[in-house]
Length: 504
Image (tube, rainbow, N blue to C red; front, side, top):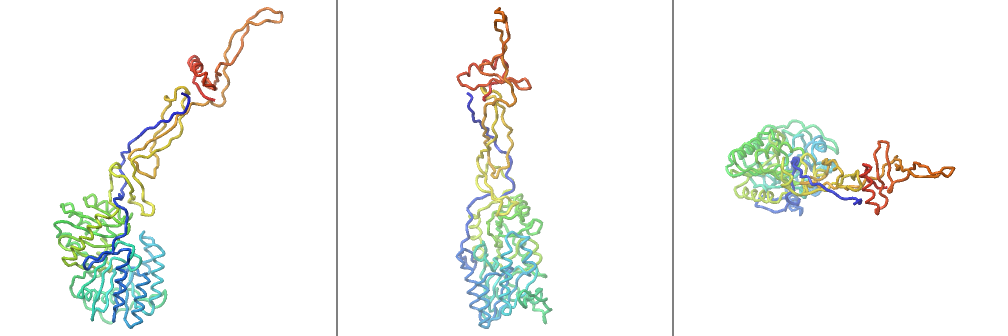
């Protein structure tokens, strides 16, 4: 009866989950599969090898563009091309733009910026390299006049060619020639600086002659004077009648393209957006979900592509102004067969991608990992569990003989790392101990005693109760049970004295 007892209470948590990405599959690398003229990036490095082989096969000219350029094998292929007499030209983002990425984007870190800078220094004197704040396109073109070959890539020429979820399209000779014309136009008219020495760039002087406008083809671009990528994307969305699938790293809710997606979804056309889970896109993906657009994500997605029943395109532009309204970006409209190939790729990503966005969801509808939408992958992964046990402080019963009458503790939802469906509060009820600063309370009895003359007389005597009784300065009475065999006596004594039984 006087031993501690354990008690518990289970409370259901009705609060919604915060805006988050729900784990639906394990995060796995993409395959390096080839689908017609479209190749995916996988850890086997097949696409990376195709790019090197393309440069190695050049006899006259290599034209390369990459926002970031830090792949040693590709740079070595460029240098070897120079050594055998091939002219090599390159476009990259300006050093200021690259440096700003460390602060702006959790995809980049200082190491990547340093590698980019180091590689550029290796190319000095052998590769004619120009840069600008707005350059973002990624592609390779070789021998455009005599034997054109080329690729458009969504991946930067760095570790992304082996570790990211990316796409590349092998270009037809006509497309490669057209893209080479765009390279020439941008090289001469939109470049801002040229690499002339290690760690030194000089301002670009005006060209002796403006290159002619490239002929129309399946190559579309964003430049300082051309927004054909934006026009094509809007046209594909507008003419879609069955479904829209889009893959993009960046997207902005106030951009007309994103607004067009929302409008199309509200008209009843199924729309799926594939992206990368990042705090920067939280507001936009919430707006997409409000329009009942399905939003899925992969930790390493960087591919940009759109498929609709009206046509398809792979591009380097994100769905935001710096990509669709200004910058230097490229895209390629796909043939009917490659459009279907792209759909197959996107459908496989839809089936396999690990994260699904939910801005407000009942906890009981999910068990497993979530990624908080306002946090990065580095520190935002949490767990939804069916039940979490919370241990509360011990509660003391006022009477050691009646532990069940002890008051319950305060049930305040703690700051947990998990998100439980239910919280099971557990605590222990202990019998009250004899408080400090109490004095023994003795009972007064009358006894007969002999005086000095031997005559009988009555006297008052104070003796201890059995078991002993104590009293505090508030006149509260405590019966001390220090022997379990005296349990009955203690109970009776507490009743008589209006006190509480306590333990030593």
